[in-house]
Length: 153
Image 1 (cartoon, rainbow, N blue to C red):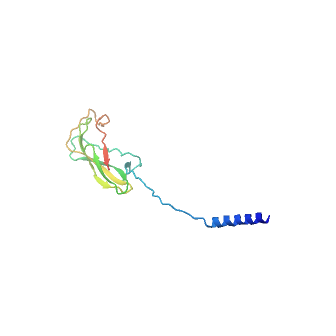
Image 2 (image 1 turned 90 degrees about the horizontal axis):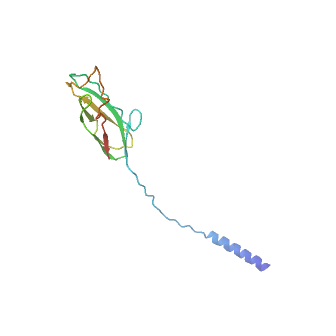
Image 3 (image 1 turned 60 degrees about the vertical axis):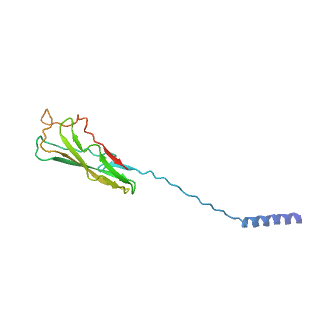
């Protein structure tokens, strides 16, 4: 019995000795991230991914240009360079037979991560007759009234 007790006490002491000598090991690892940069267009009015339509009113043979503008935001990844381009800067509307020009307030920029306002300016040149069979016409049936803005980044 005495031997059994001594054996048990020895085992218990050995267990405490082993656990008090517990060691640790460490290892290092990297966290590798990938960021896919992007640019977005959104309306200044609604935040939707659209540009508000540009509306211009013109009277046949007027002596000054008819002008108007619309604004939108570009939001790009921080420090990402981008360029803006319109599909056509000078257009002959095929419903009203009026020529107009479009321009952008900025043709390029660098992303800040925040909305950056851009303006599209439109102008109908003076002295044009146009085509209309009533007192007032719209270009609702024009097949070339939709313009495209491209952001390259």
